[in-house]
Image (tube, rainbow, N blue to C red; front, side, top):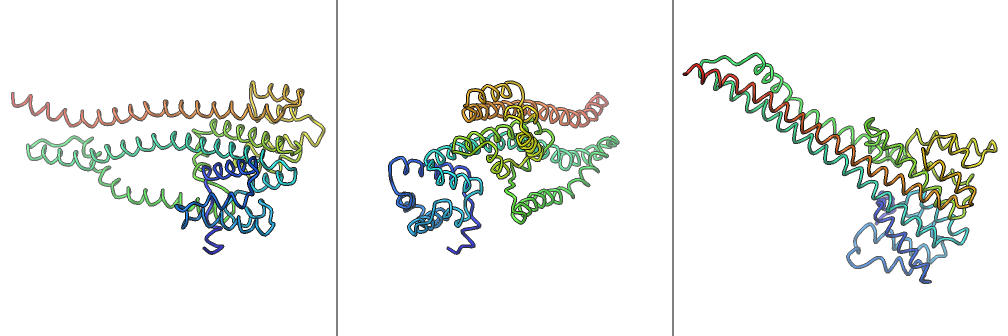
Length: 353
């Protein structure tokens, strides 16, 4: 496979977590990483991107390259992970770093799944509601209107307006679908050209309705990244250099900058965190206690777990709120349309008696 193709492939969160976990096991067992990477390339992966990348990394390591250099050359790993691996190799804590990275990407995958689940169900429900309404307006109502005309009853102005709206709207459905795909495609192209690691998840999190969830996600990511960096040997001041490759929220970036600026001006880490407002309530107090106890990494790890749980609850609450609203909307629209249909029929039946 050419270098161009290898650079085009990026490991997903599941793959990154699995690779990190397996490398940490190799290091713990005293197995050479290059031998372990070759063992990971089983027969089923013989023609896959994964096989080619891992075999290429094993070949690089056999030439006395460092793991971080082999990862960077493959182009399949995020810059944050490469930086953490380089730190682990420099400090002799590579096993701990790989184990921490495995948990980090496992958490990111869970987060991705929660966001997808929270968005997917309402989206499917919205599509189904739209299909029902379009079918009623463009198919059932016109047929009903023709039946009434055959019976010598003129359709109400409301039915005519709905039929006209449905006829006009159906012509633009295809255009709307094309526009949606164009926006999503343009977003992905921009992400690749600009070199920013933006994903569909980042696009969804910019929806105003998800703003509170976005803040919790950013706070959890900050806590997780700080815990991993500090436990891996980074000084607090230096750890901020890694955060830009993980957190995509501009609001969170501004808060992180406030923390860094306050630390440079002489504030303690806990004071800087409180001034930034990136945490709220109990996590703020936990940082102060952790700093006094000299266990900031443990406290930040616990805070990341708290925000992960809060994110899950917030997303579930969001779905629980949206679902009945959309169902009620469908019931009201369908009920109004059926009422409009039934009233003329009731008039016809009563006139027959």
